[in-house]
Image (cartoon, rainbow, N blue to C red; front, side, top):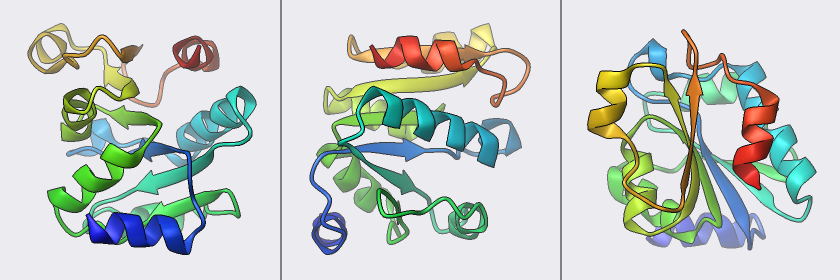
Length: 156
């Protein structure tokens, strides 16, 4: 909890959207273009919000290599455990995540969220977000294959 609050204070972040671009396995990892598509849609939706990118210790370098941080986009690179991730999810105004535990954590906090799932009926029926605050985007064939219009509709 302290790491998340310290990070937000140090970066002067109040209201923010949390983006979790990576899940387990390559089929649950967004590429740089997809992350940029999400950031652009968020900024178009509400310019006042900061964007915080979440990574785990094993995906930190991958996210850093995408060079996405700016004055309004920060990388919470201090998440060393699920507890750090839980703390930052709890503080977010909106959570955008691929199919991972972050979806379920956001559901537990009743957070507005956009959950991105690859088209897989069995997986979705078992692991869909159990929340009335979740908008789901189903990406056809590949997690990165979702449209900007789907994203914009999910933000409304």
